[in-house]
Length: 280
Picture 1 (spheres, helix red, strand yellow):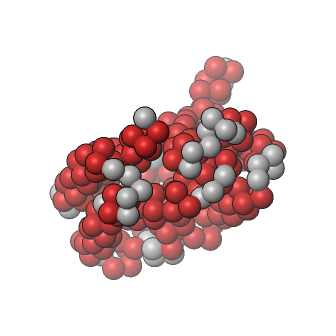
Picture 2 (cartoon, rainbow, N blue to C red; picture 1 turned 180 degrees about the vertical axis):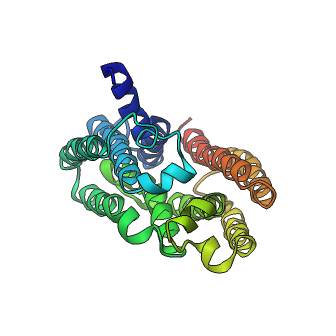
Picture 3 (cartoon, helix red, strand yellow; picture 1 turned 60 degrees about the vertical axis):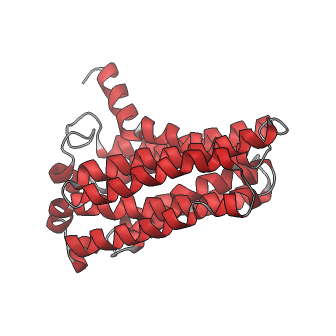
């Protein structure tokens, strides 16, 4: 295999779109906390650490999931032969080491959040992924904690606590829908995900119920006067997209979870808009 193909395989292994998206969420956390301009180095280090750690987590997840991916995701780098399992593991270790080095330059609370997240990323596949609902909850925490990490890197996490909760609940919904999508491969591997344990329709009902909670809670920053009308003008359409996504997941889980991702990013944008309106 030539160097270009191997390099492309390593890039694919890290799933750069997801990694960069996580970095953007860390930036949002720092921005909502109001510390991007005051502490640009800390914000930059937190963003870079997030991107590298998520890339590392994706790589090690593919390493442990290589047998399942032959059924569920045969186009991923290890099943298609672009990267060897040993190469994926080594690549993950390198990314983790650099991410840790960057995180250690941040304030203590940010270091603590990074430490918990790094451990969760490493042990997720082997310990938590196959436990009904538990693996989903771990991923949901990791998704929401990017906002806390960004805020902790530049100052106080208080402005991002509501954002963390909303993001975590929305992510939990999406993870359950994704498990419905992956039932065939997970069952073949002997995993006991929520759809396998309680059934696909019941799992989708749980996911929809969780999303309703998140949608009902989304106006809280407006009610508490943390953000004004511009926030509400963006978050309400985001709620509509996510509710439609939950409904669509009953017919097409793949389409539903993709739509939910778009709705989640639109909801994140609402917090950015809300913060910009405050400083404008």
